[in-house]
Amino acid sequence: MRASEAVADWQWKNAAAGSAAGLATVTFSHPLDVVRTRFQVNDGRNPHLPSYKNTSHALFTIARSEGLKGLYGGFYPAVLGSTISWGLYFYLYSKAKQRYLKNRDELTPGLHLASAAEAGALVCLLTNPIWLVKTRLQLQTPEYQSRPYSGFHDALKTVVKDEGWRALYKGLAPGLFLQVTHGAIQFTAYEEFRKVLVNFRTEQSVLISGSAEILKTIDYITLGASSKLAAILVTYPFQVIRARLQQRPGIDGLPRYMDSWHVMTKTARLEGVNGFYKGITANLVKNLPSASLTFVVYETILDMLQLARFKK
Image (cartoon, rainbow, N blue to C red; front, side, top):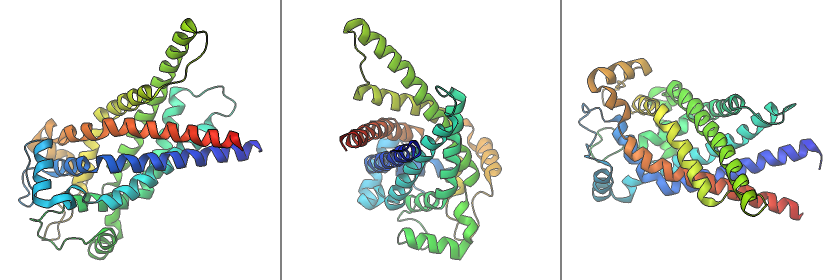
């Protein structure tokens, strides 16, 4: 196999591993995603949005009043968006790393950051309409006054018909900044933490047995959770801004927020710093284990694909 074919093969394996990881993540954590979104948009001034005391109360209340349909609202676009996003992200990320790696022995943290940022920006541009629909489906409750969307395709058609195609890109600015910075921070942290851990494990193994030891599942769990935590703490306010911009207009047809600056100033004035971190508990409970699962699945499938390649 030529070098160019080997590189392309590796990139598609990254895409396949990333897609599988994204699907596993969404299936496991979607009810918490619904809770997070409802907390994020609840500014206390919309009578059609239910209020919850905490994450467990929200899960119980939604399950009791809306059933599985409520807990898994927006599940189809979440699966579609996550599968596409993770697949594209891993593919574009590995492709960017390969490009930056030319004439270098290894990538610097800055180049890891650039690779992740590049991949994140492209993914965000392609998937924003899917995330907008997911957010709106998650916010549909029995108290909602407008005609509910019957599903993903109905939501897409209704948004374009009632609000124009530009509405599909509401929340793009904070989403773009979020995707670029969050992914960049997470992957850079993951790569750097992984490098430190590999060096530590190698030195430890050599001292004990004289042979290098590969990372174990618990190591990938720790790496995934710690890198995700770093990214969440820095970027969470942009998730809140995006969710509030992507809400469906009221029955008067007017959006609750005009743009990102409007969300920032209004939230800061009326809710303070806490307003930018609403739903973060559900977000942490959802994302720390799912980030671990994502990287465990990703690394496992990547190893399986590599093993299959060597057997040919």
